[in-house]
Image 1 (cartoon, rainbow, N blue to C red):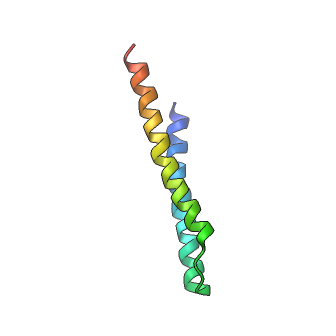
Image 2 (cartoon, rainbow, N blue to C red):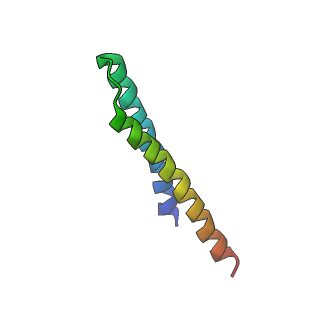
Length: 64
């Protein structure tokens, strides 16, 4: 189960990287990188999605 927790936080790392990429492209080229912003938003969503289901799975194991 520790591996699932690691991947949960990996989504946040990817969100930061995609956000950095979008900001870097905006500062250097003046264009908005919609793809990077979309992937950053998706990574944040996946973090909370995985967190919710990991807690649900942990509560299911603890109730037995």
